[in-house]
Length: 617
Ligand code: GLN
Figure (tube, rainbow, N blue to C red):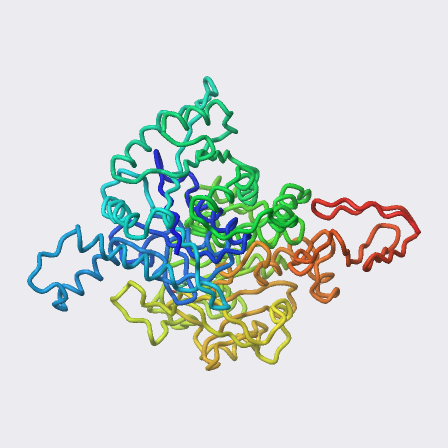
């Protein structure tokens, strides 16, 4: 097993997670099996009890683990399935050691940070590194470990010490350190400042770890002289300094990184079995994706009506899932965050400007998304958004709490059950259309929800989502305590709110669709967690297509995206040699199939990087 430790210097939030994911992506493109571990040195056992304002969204894994959002980046970039143990926290390590102590495993000994905590960290990493993260059960060959925070944080010290020991445990050719550091470029001079990087590298060395790679993050490109300066002051060769400036999209990062000969570096340093020269098509999917993202010309405006809109990371996976779909459809996502409470009548009185601004943003959007959430604040505003989408026939996607909001709004305004509510929000309501699930353990907050991957089965009903998923049985990730009250289902359905999919026991309402509305869809599960850049999640794809006015033509085409909106299959295909698509122009239809062309006029077709000129005959 080979290990790459990724540490951070100067400040946090410079994109260490993206750098770690990028290493993994590039190595995976070389045919190497990669797994990743994220270390969060806080004392919480997991991220489950955090407010999204603390560290951004809580990411949920197949096994129900509630983890740091960086694991979402890893899963999306590498298309892997991680496990809860791939996220280590100080809390988990201490809990493990304390349990062992109570069990008498250290009988007679004083239990200490060194060696007991540091040993537990090393054992955990070694154990998790061997666990497969791919569907075929392949054993990982490289494990990338990202240490959260920055070097020098008190909380991170036991982990740094553990890895100082670890480098000797696993031997030099199996372990290397990449240090991600900020190179500020103050506006006044525009000059790149290397001092902060120098001192953070010095600090890392002082703790017994020497960087093998220094990844410099900066706003603008760093010139060669600065690279040389960092190399000489930080005691590394110039090829060990990698510069990643702010790029047009995160999909450019693997490309810029690869150009700096990172594969050659890892191959040499970790003695990896990577054949050279690399195939002609090396990373072509990423290159195509990055080029496509840079060439999006039209915009689609989506309003996200939520409660944690002050911090964009609170909805990281939802935002990414919307982007994946918009890119697939060939649109630039313009996302507006609307604070749900601002849509409420109470705000109209207390702050009319905010109220009218919020409504203006909602009215301007092409489609609306109400994401998951907890608690009372903003709920009435979410109900207003649901109502507006229902009445004005605006494309709508509700997720988890968004589904519950759609049910409450419908019960109140269509069924006339005026005080209809969720028992989470009003336990006294006479019409609890959303109720606690039996397994919800009151009083115990951590890890007690209905969590992780569960089966959802479509009913034998007309359903747009069944069509978009293309199957009767799906598996998606959950995170909730409340559910639609089965007692109200027949009443809701009779009035047009159809529950088109349920869990395996047919007890839980998983998907709702409004009859007669082109796209009024909500899911009790969180489809955002399984969306991938090259395989967008169907509920999001539906929202984007409906918002661009393209849902019907997509369905009519048998759920295939047109050439400009390449679907995953087409994206995979080797279209340098073989082009299979149909194209509509204003004048006529041109069919190009394996080189056979039928057309009557001259057109130009642009597909990602390749520009084809097709002339009649
Ligand atoms: N608060 C709701 C519940 O617990 C919704 C949760 C969510 O949106 N993730 O059921």
